[in-house]
Amino acid sequence: MEPILEGAVEVHSHLGPGDERSLADDVLDGLTRPFKELPAKHLYDARGSELFDAICEQPEYYPTRTERLILEACAEDVVARTGAVELVELGSGAATKTRVLLTAMAAAGTLDRYVPVDVSESTVLACAETLVGAYPGLRVHGLVGDFERHLGHLPRPTGPRLIAFLGGTVGNFPPGSRRRFLRGLAKVLGGDGHLLLGTDLVKDPAVIEAAYNDAAGITAQFNRNVLQVVNRELHADFDVGAFEHVAFFDRRRQWIEMRLRATELQHVRVADLGLGLDFSAREEIRTEISAKFTRKRLEGDLAAAGLELVELFTDPGDLFAVSLSRVRPR
Image (tube, rainbow, N blue to C red):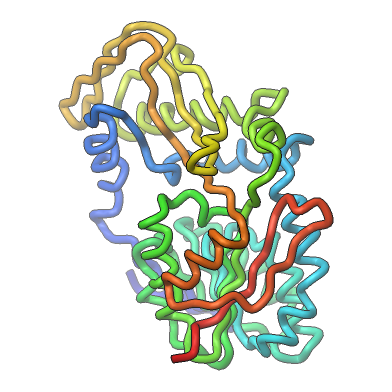
């Protein structure tokens, strides 16, 4: 696709004709395994994103508001330590979390460029238009793509780069994949770049489990919505109401698992794949893991990726952390 150019805004799309196969491939691979699972990224269609926004407002769900408070407290320090002139945000959405960083960079006189990375072109364009109006002189180089696969398409740094990967999303990767992804980030940081990473912390399991089992049932709707996505996109016939939401903290692995549990024996047809799936009563589909971190786990993952921890910012209750790291000197 040709880049979209408009004044201070440049947007490049790297989603090709084969990308719509991602869901089909994941369904074929994940739902034909002895233990069925689907990648968490398929939870976030338009409806799923709306539901997640609603989750973030629930009293039990502490990560979003806690991370925001940490960012507000540490933004000036981060900008002073890094001297960053550009901010790259993975999974940028409307850039609501990172405006505090952009504001701090503008106040320090270093803000030059913002690089949002998101799968939605309309979201990137709308965000770019808003930000260039809010920050005079700001240039936006948007990248429409999957941050797991398209990091190589990031523009070359214009100076010290800060990559922000917030929301605890890094915890959705299994340990091996997480470290590989962090190694990929280290490669695109640049010699004087820094990574700002949001991670949920290990704490009382009851607090963690409550965040994924809100009393209003919004997370249950969000979880079941992935079946609506499969029904719509692949012409499947899942009875969404015949699956119940399950979320629990695995104390050994120190992560949350979200699952969908069949409430009765059923047969599901996925027409676009010519696939038939049998579910026994109480059989489950894993739809998300969300790892929780200790400082030791975080430092281990960073070290395996060739990164070193510069500073760990937390809230007074040690619920959540935002870490600043850089490529480890050779």
